[in-house]
Amino acid sequence: MVDIENELRHCCTAESDALMNAPLGYLNDTALQRLVPAEAIVRLESVSKVYPGRHGAPVSALDGIDLAVPQGSVLGVIGRSGAGKSTLIRLVNGLEKPTSGRVIVDGADISALPERALRHARRSIGMIFQHFNLLSSRTAAENVALPLEVAGYDKAAITARVDELLSLVGLADKRNRYPSELSGGQKQRVGIARALATKPKVLLSDEATSALDPETTRSILDLLSRINAELGLTVLLITHEMAVIRSIAKEVAVIDAGRIVEKGDVFDVFTRPQHPVTRSFLADETGRALPPYVADRLRPEAAPGTQAVVRIGFRGPHATDPVLARLARDLNIETNILAGSVDEIAGRPCGTLVIGVPEASLEKTLTFLKHYGLDTEVLGHVA
Amino acid sequence: MSPEMIRLLAGATGETLLMVAISAGLGTLFGLPLGVFLATSGKGELFAAPWANRVLGVVVNATRSTPFIILVVAIIPFTRLIAGTSIGTNAAIVPLTVASTPFIARLIEGAIREVDQGLIEAARAFGASPLQIVLKVLIPEALPGIVLGLTLAVVSLIGFSAMVGAVGGGGLGDLGIRYGYQRFMPEMMLAVVVVLIVLVQALQSLGDILARHLNKRIRHA
Ligand SMILES: Nc1ncnc2c1ncn2[C@@H]1O[C@H](COP(=O)(O)OP(=O)(O)OP(=O)(O)O)[C@@H](O)[C@H]1O
Ligand SMILES: [Mg+2]
Image: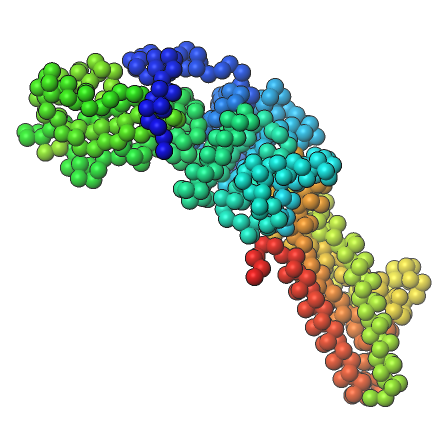
């Protein structure tokens, strides 16, 4: 179990606290940049990718992408199917060449490297896949050994490294199993071990948990977090699931139709989504979806006998109760709680509360809540 | 059956096996690289060479669509050049190899094309060269399919080798024609057919067992 109090104290470094308590306008670019270490190990500079259409018009998969992945960070890219996520990640290890723009990884211009140098560079960029892509003819250990054989390591070095890697991913006892004898989660662990074999600096993950159940997804994400923390490996992962981003990434970029429409600190993007696509991804998140009995009766206009439905977003360690209690005490406004949850995003607590407010008191209530630095949104009105 | 007949039968079986083994071996030697090339040289593939791919494809198809008996006759000068003669077991190996090479190439191409593209992607991602991908990924992964394909090729070669018997090639086909048909010895004809059936059954079972043993995609009980 997470010790909430400890967690709260942990997250309240001066800087994050200042951010959390800051009014909206404070969250400008300079404030974000200050939180982000300057060196980026992966940098995409105005990258565009156009595929020659098989039949008819060419397909523009990416359009003017600028993205920097700081050394040692976990950056998540989220987008709908066909948004260009796979194309983006495949540019990073040169499986795909950009039509224009540059892709810099660890100081090398991947997009300009000749084939041989590119193959060498790929040893420092590991990759894991949605469908694991393990060789069915090789055991777990032999699969992990493959990148090492390709890189020309000698037998003894390979054996030692493979043992080390299988222990790291918790599969030491499965070393002689074939992929067909492993579960999905175990296969992905082998995939991770294989990706780490040549000691890469960057790990690319293309929907690595999309074929797994929620519990297995958790354990794989935990493993990736651990690898990020212990080995200092930079992780760039793409997904279409917000839950994946929030449990592992510190930064997120939202991609839609080949463009990055929103990016920033995961906590900020999740608690104050700006772009409709981001909002739609968040709609299914717990606490944000209205319960049916409210949603069904919600209407856009106030009418006699209705009350306003207001969503309050709590970011950081604000106690929820005192706000409503104070509202009742100081302004004598009584509210109904319609829905709510307290959650943790990127290791920081946040909450959502949906309340019903008497129409006559709506303005005063909103002013009052904003005064406390809370985010508010009027969702509609219910009878 | 007389001991003489048994001696003849054993000798012919040996000749057939020799012809099939050598032509299958040579066919694999030439057909494997050809098949790998056909499977990997299409547009956008590992050794992309679309033109060479197309030309070789046409040559392979032309050879395969020529009826075997016509092929045997058509390449007699070539057979003489290689084997020094156009009759006998050694000479028969030449047309058998010529016929089996494109056949084996297509079977191997098919087996390699069955390999999941994701594996090529993964291998490229960890820095494997195209040649390493062929040797360490494609061939090992396609091996069960390759073995089944080669089994099919060997079985077909047994049939073809019986056919070269008809034009003086030696082996079981030759025996069957000369004794069973020309000298009208139905029991010899029957014996030849039985031996052929047993050979084909045995080789097919052997191939199946080997392929099953190599296939790690399915769980073994
Ligand atoms: N090799 C290709 N040739 C032509 N078009 C392609 C190719 N690869 C991708 N595309 C197109 O580029 C666009 C982006 O594809 P991409 O695979 O990057 O999307 P994605 O975000 O990964 O989607 P998904 O979530 O479904 O995997 C799509 O419109 C797709 O059809
Ligand atoms: Mg994709």
